[in-house]
Length: 112
Image (cartoon, rainbow, N blue to C red; front, top):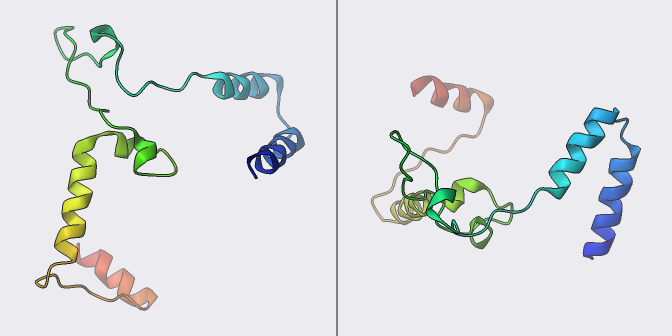
């Protein structure tokens, strides 16, 4: 299955009309190393003001939560916030508004 998907992706990429610089950019993106799960040293961590390493914000593997690997899920604080929102949504006190039409959506957005 993965081979078929890879072949289709490759065929798609070959069908694109890319300039030389676009091809170089794409090749660079395809060859970029994937980030490790944790920084290997304090030098790899993001820096805060003053030049000292801060605590890593990406402390989880996003692929464990999201099939897309969205970096939003790499921060465990975001995962906890989503889990808390889900817990609240399943509580008996939760209330919901059903949006069934374009007017419902527009009205809801305008009320924010």
